[in-house]
Amino acid sequence: MESSARLPGPAGMTSQPALPREQLQALFDISQVLNAIWEIDSLLERIMDIAIQTVNAERGFLVLREDGNGTGLSVRTARNIAPESALSVSEISRSIVMGAIESQQGVLTIDAQTDPRFAGAESVIFNQIRAVMAVPFLLRGKIVGAIYLDSRKHREGFTDELLAFVKAFSNLCAIAIENARLMGSLRDENYQLRSEVQRTYQFKEIIGNSPRMQDIFELLNKIIHADISVLLEGESGTGKELVARALHYNGPRRDKAFIAQFCGNLSETLLESELFGHKRGAFTGAVSDKKGLLEIADGGTFFLDEVSDIPPSIQAKLLRVLQDGEFRRVGDTETRRVDVRVISATNKPLNKEVEKGGFREDLFYRLNVITINMPPLRDRDGDLPLLVRHFLNKYASKSGMQEKKIASEAMRMLSGYHWPGNVRELENAIERAIVLAGDRDLTPDELIIPRVMKAPGGSRSLREHERDYVMRTLDEMGGNKTKPPRLLVSPCAGCTTSWRNGKTAAIDTDVIDLLMLP
Image (tube, rainbow, N blue to C red; front, side, top):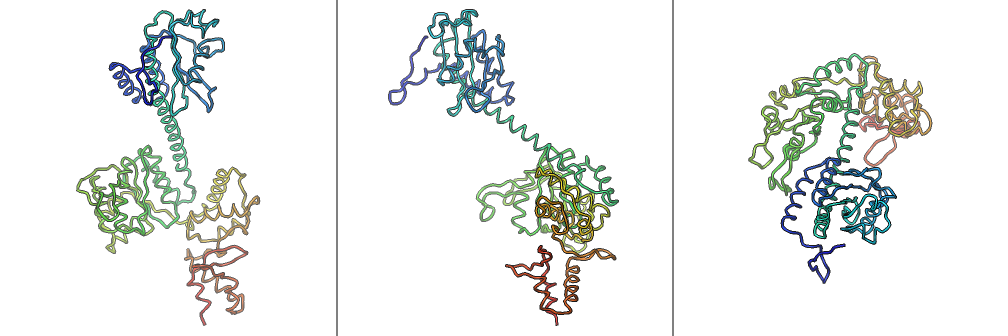
């Protein structure tokens, strides 16, 4: 095997042979090419072509390590050699590649016919191989793969200098291969997540056969591809955000971000910074520039939850975004542009807020291109059994357990409750009952809800139901006010809790004050 002069390294150690200027330039050019290719198969093909051309080899192949140990090698690309036979036990190429991998050094010979290391190798004699080079791909001390090159006629490229060049080239290749693999994994994961999100937020996930819900489905189908602002009105827990996500993930902006911001109970400064971002030094604690959520949502959908709570000064800035797509970060003078679809939600009639002067009329009309009124669960006749079955199936799939059944008495109990928390409260009640039921089907004992019936004359507030419940208990006790507290109330830190069949449910402390009446 030929050798070449090497430059002295630190503490008397020898380093790799110095690379000529043209080879250094070639490495730079190669790194530019490799870093521009993110698809793994295209990258490997390019690596193979560069190596063949550099050494002027006639044959070659590239292997990658496919598992956690050193034995799982697979041929990913080859030139003038059958990939299926490249790593055959009968081929000398296999032992050369394995030797390069085990030593983590390159293997080089300019005459395999006379090299004692390959004496008796039938494949060397049969294929009349003269020059051979094999170099591992090494990344952070671990083997990524290797490249094998040989030639029967041309030996001028199989030198120590070019071996050093191919080693440096192989280090670049190892980084590029790892990056391409990671990018491929991220693409696959991204695709799976997007597919799962789109499946989760399909319109069929919005359950309902009631006339009110059918009207909503009809409207959603009309506006799904229209890039317009939508205002969702309805009580808390009616599914406003679910509809907003369905509009996004089934619409033209599905491949971009869906960003949601709750606007209630936030200070004006904090909300402004969250929406529009801020410049470093704009206020105490602004230690660096920060992107606002509107910038992050650029190209996608921005969901403003409880939009009626936005302060007037921020309403003016939001109006400019809707009109011109422009805004400024807090403390900044630079005008920025975004392209977002705004979907907003409120549990208050926004037109009433406009009449009271708490909400800008011009902003209301910008948000209110299409309004969807989400009905409360108590007004969705016939939908409750559908929702119950949906949640039973959902949590069975989530836990991998068999879907539970629900007793008719339990279903009657659910139907008799007025659901002030709407669909969200129902889902929580079903999930809690599934956990409490263990291996059994659901009965009234697992349902932790106040056992009060809906008023025949229409919906009533939770406080009214609780008041009636307390008064009935007083009647049952013959007006004795010392027993109801023990039956209804168990003191705890900062809360009042009712007990019914061993289960707890919150009762408003104002209602408990009834027990103190003369």
